Image (cartoon, rainbow, N blue to C red; front, side):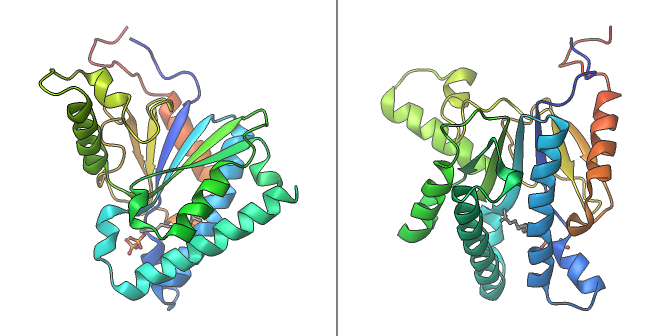
Length: 240
Ligand code: FPP
């Protein structure tokens, strides 16, 4: 039995409401994603300043593939632009937001073109020689059920006929060394996990705010962290 009086070690972000944010301003949906990408970068900086060690951002789910092609293309073009920009600025030491930050990607990378996979690998290799204060995982073409099925299939292929343990699954997830999230924040008032970190969220605290993702600020992040720190986590046991 542990209470949550310490900072969350790992926060998961379900960045929702980009479309509604754009609509409220009479803009097309891609403008919402554009604004959301800026908030992603600001939130990385806030996490680093506040001493959060791991942050996972849900950028594109396997289910998002059912969106209109135009929107998927706009999201992928936005990702490519950000990826190039982040890579160039980190390499040239221009971008303090990513100082001592390592970026990783979780999800099914086989969906991406060779050039996008290369981009992803280049970004994952940035800062590996540095003292890392914050690990950022970007969930791209990610689905929690898919992740579990892949882990199980991987185990069966290597150990035919053997019973499987929780550890066997945990060790075959996309980022097995990243601790489970303590806190999941979802914006835009929704209260669903939507296939995000299904296995890892077994004991995560959930926090929902009505703020649309593009408007999510450092103050909103602090409110979520305060709420987390005032909760009692029981992990199936009883309160102390
Ligand atoms: C959900 O809002 C948001 C997404 C499907 C995409 C999130 C992506 C970003 C914020 C860009 C991230 C960029 C980088 C570089 C990591 P929605 O479109 O479902 O909004 P709605 O529910 O209001 O329609």
